Image (cartoon, rainbow, N blue to C red):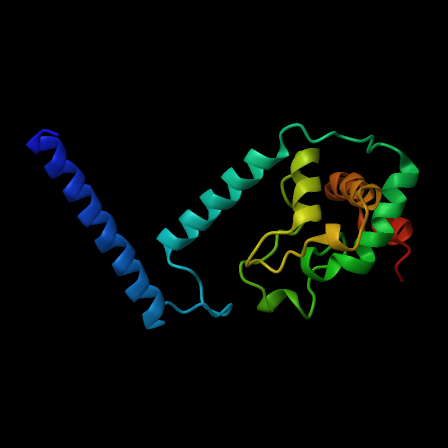
Length: 171
């Protein structure tokens, strides 16, 4: 092996060892505040967001989309959403909840937010997202129930508070 190649390998191994050691010291020190009442640093947040986006994108390919325009499916999703989701994600006419202020990162307000692609919404609901309080509903709901939620969530931004209350059967 040539000296230049050998030197490059040793340098790379040394840098890797320092990076791993530095990471271990950082984690072991407890200096990073993991509390949900304090925000991440901009770098940490950027890394987490990129990891989340790339991870979901890598896993949704080939996911079979089910029909989500069926009114019965939307109504079933609305009732399930009212029971399971509204506390975190709000709804038309529901602008706050007791649990939402303590969540970090704050969950999106799905009544006002950008509409997710069907496969992405299904994957997120089914598998959840680590360290966000978004549960993996696939542990307690079957795929049909999750597709009902997807059907409803896709209609949510265009609903009035009255329509939401009627379809979700909330008082």
